[in-house]
Image 1: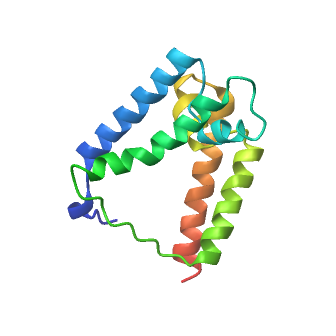
Image 2: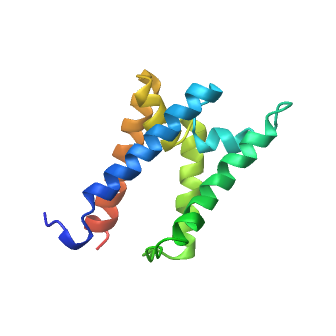
Amino acid sequence: MNIDWIHFTPWTSLAGGLIIGTAAAGFVLFNGRIAGISGILGGLLRPACGDIGWRVAFPLGLAAAPLAYAMFSALPVATVAADDVTLTIAGLLVGLGTRYGAGCTSGHGVCGLSRQSPRSLVATAAFMLAGFATVFVTRHLFV
């Protein structure tokens, strides 16, 4: 195994993790809600009274963050090594997984594990193993 030392960013990764953890903890402490994006967006499909404002503000904040970052520094160039069909299938599979798993990676992996939820531990292990298997199959078996 080789490490790409040029793109190895432990300090910025640590800072990002601390920001995400702090935001998720603040969200549950101040709002009593889990910061899982699938649940937040799913709640917009059948919103409860007084529930729309924060559910709209959350994804808008997610979209605004890189725009605010771009005011101070250049955004990194993102490259995706997949075609549109592959990305569409992958997105549908992820959406299906969030429905079957009753939550997304942020809901289970960040918020659920920090609350020591057994369901989130199983869900996180399942999506991590599925990701490992997908990478192995696509990079080593379909070469």
